[in-house]
Amino acid sequence: MSVAARWRIGIVVAFVALLELVTRMAWINPVSFIPPSAMAASAWNLLVSGQYTTDILQTLGTALLAVLLAAVFGFIGGVMLFRLPRLRRVLDPLLLSYYAVPVFVLYPILIVLFGLNRWPLVGIGFIFAVVAMAVNTLNGLERVPRVMLRTARVCRMSTFEEIRLITLPASLPYVFTGIKLTVVYAFIAVVAGEFVLSGSGFGYQIAFAYNAFDNPTMYGLMLLMLVFVGTLNGLLRAAETRLYRRIRREAV
Amino acid sequence: MSTIVVSHTSRPRHARRWLDGVVLVIVLVALWQVLSELLGPTVVTTPWRTLLRAVRIVSDEDFPESLRVTSIAFGTAFLISAVGGVAAGLLLGARRLAGEVAEPLMMGFYSIPKVTLYPVVLLACGLGLWAKIVFGVIHGIIPIALFTMNAVRNMPPIYTRAAHTYRLGPAEFARHILLPACLPEVVAGLRIGFSLTLLGTLIGEMFASQSGIGRLLMIAMNRNETSTIMALALMLFVFATVVNLLFLGWQKRLAHDS
Image (tube, rainbow over all chains, first blue to last red; front, side, top):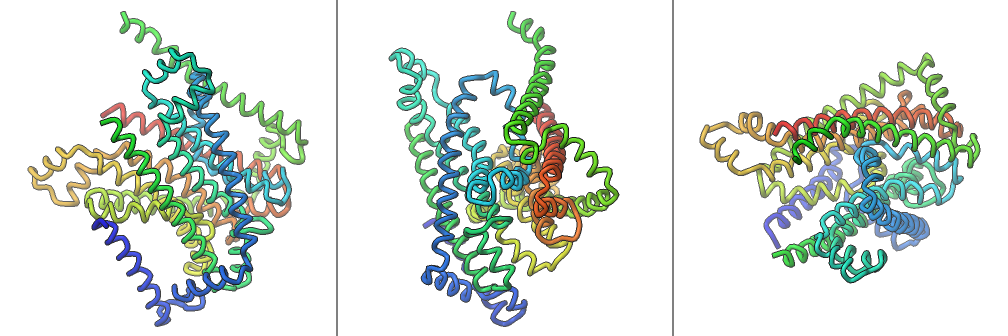
């Protein structure tokens, strides 16, 4: 384990211990901020009791659907942008300023459009994630060596074959970065949407517990979410680093 | 010969970029119009109606107060994010170990749905201005810090050696070497941080506030007034896009200079 990783663990442990001490000694209001150990106990109970299993699964399902849609359409969009430079030139300002605009304000409109069910959540997750996927795909395609594309033409591959056999493997790490961002963004958007306005799901339950002044449940759910997203993010990062390392090794 | 060709096309190219922008806007408005025709004006308001509605909202007598409240909260939040983020980024970039320790932690924090942490912020700060500001800052400060940190890491090492030769102190080093060298990247970070801070402030206002743009949005959501939601969204989009284009222009000019 590297020095940095050890420091990192040390900092997190020290931070949690400090929170524990501060709340146990009641230096900050223990009603509004409960000790981390109590949070962990509450999170464990919530998980074991199975009371929130449906909500958790619902959120995961919604996010997964949004990720799938965004990954597929983002990839297609990226390929189209690469193939049609004219389209790309027109859309360039939109792509550059897409994440500079609070897209989230579209969520209420999606609710009006689809009704108060899971579809607006899938929609906002998709809208939030798809451009990251398209931009990263485009970025990856631009880095495919020209000679490979020429080889594809020499072998008279069809467009589909070319994507499957040449373009996709060659641009895989960048496409994977796109998928990683898609997962992160879709999850953020879905949970945020649930928190703002919805009838079920993980974000909704946090908001519900908050409105009911049920702080142990609220912190327990938050901790579950933090652990889940943290783990997911760590796994994706590890896979990403490995992919990039492989590419670098091949280049040398 | 090629130089002649390049100099010849430089003016039309500039004009063409303008044309591209116009084409994009026209296509977007046309799509919007088609969508509202398809789904009915109660679901998606037509562009023209939305514009009229936006004018009505702006001329409403309560609007300046809402705008003022939001501007104060957002301005403060962005100022804190910018100064704090750049300072943290410079520090973490210059100290290699600290940067390595902090980067995954910051990436992790960046990737969690921070909206759900809103109750904690509210419990810590109470209802009011500071909850909104803190919420804006936790959204915006991380990307600014990350961009700045990466810029410092990628700085040519000879600058550092030159600073050593001149025996600059840490503050002088940051002011005369680090900041100018990293400015284009810092501006890119500010550009992203700007929108996230805006989003954070707005979401903060949507939940717990007596006034402000976010509150107007929430009221319209509860009353199911599509035209108001769309008019407010349009105004926010235009504002964010204009600021973004200004940041982009600044970034391009800096890249051009160096």
